Image (cartoon, rainbow, N blue to C red):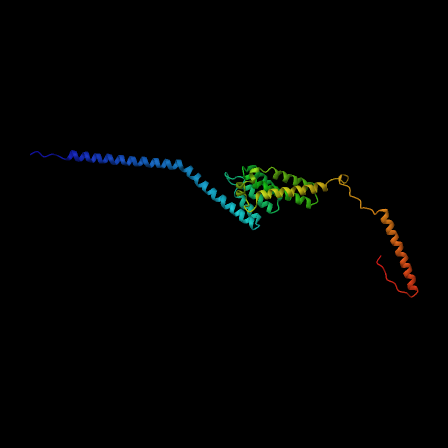
Length: 264
């Protein structure tokens, strides 16, 4: 009987297993390389996403701090928080100067507040300009009030005119419900505030311009009405009559009589 050898078969199986293991290891190394390059390639996107989320959270945090500080009259704290909104503010670039200007106005730093609000107006788009224009007009109006209080009525009238221009150039879309929803002060009716501000500015400007008119241009004061000749004669007659009665009464008192004084 012939015995069949199994050595070639065992050797073949071992070789196949070794080849399969090598192929598996090579495949794993390839996958690891691919994952590593994918991780490296997506790292900027991951960092950008983290930065985006962090920026959004910081914007809301700084905005909340600015509003909270302003409500309690901490204008310096409100201004500091608003400055935190300036860094990489791609989404609402007008918000930082708007909040800074509003805080400065609360601290009565009117020229600085106006400069920031004018910057905000340049950066604002669409309905964003509505609330910026209202606050800017109010700040310029207060500049006019300060000038008038210092005795410079001409400068006051000029400030009032500038504020009136700001309000009159407000887009019609600012009277919409959508604009009201975007207002920095939901409790303030934007359209009513605009109309009240315009009326107030017109009155103030007119008053200051009238006061600045030269004397010759001012309307002449109406002379007080003079009594007619008839009234003068009647008054003269009463005075003479009264004098006669007083003389007669004086004579009666000298003779021991009594008399009643009349209320001339």
